[in-house]
Amino acid sequence: MFRRLFGAAFAAGIVAGLAISAIQEFTTTPIILHAEEYENAGTEAAIPESAIPETAVFRVAGTGAFHGFTIYKAHSGEDHGDESWGPKDGLERSLFTAGTNITMGIAFALMLTAAFAVHGGAISGRIGLLWGIGGFAVFTLGPNLGLPPEVPGSMAAELGVRQLWWIGCAAATGIGLCLMVFGRKLPLTVLGVLIIAAPHIVGAPQPAEVGGGVPPEIAGHFAAASIVVAAIFWVMLGWLSGTFYQRFSGTYA
Image 1 (cartoon, rainbow, N blue to C red):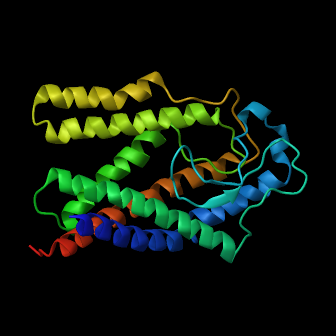
Image 2: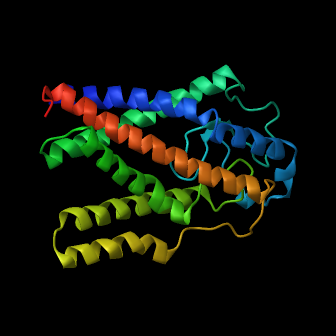
């Protein structure tokens, strides 16, 4: 069982992480680099300090979790003297992005293979793909309805509040989907729908002011591209997890 769970998760996470990193080089990464030109030009100076994400050595593009995993350098209104360390543009940056993708891919694949084991039954690539679609709904589609992916320089609410809402929304979406799919009774299905809707009824935290240094066309393009890339990632991860899980179990039915 250990070999099946961890072997399949590591294999699927590495392959999916490398594949999505290559895809990002032609999709979300160019958009982020373009947005950074506006951020680095000093347009962030017009953004209220309360709306600027907390400074870090580097941060992951997106809101709360992972909309593309592309690493970009953090900026804030504070004066740090020399620029805080961050991966250099080019190969170093691509390697850090790929490493992040692989790490997250393995983590998410472990969730999928654990779900396979708990649910039981025959698992194949096609079954894994369905679980991957569920993962996309839980970790991307549901939270993105309230907190769309963000590019550098975008205005946003306080980081901790956004992360708390994101976690609650992902948990509610997962619980609601389980009740709807596995409940098999109308009351449970209705309860699942209500649980999924609850975080959105409460509402996601929003910035005090709307705007930012990045043109809305770039922000919108990034949000759309990130969701598509995340969908590709989850479809690949689900199929790979199911396929490797089947192979490591020694069955090929």
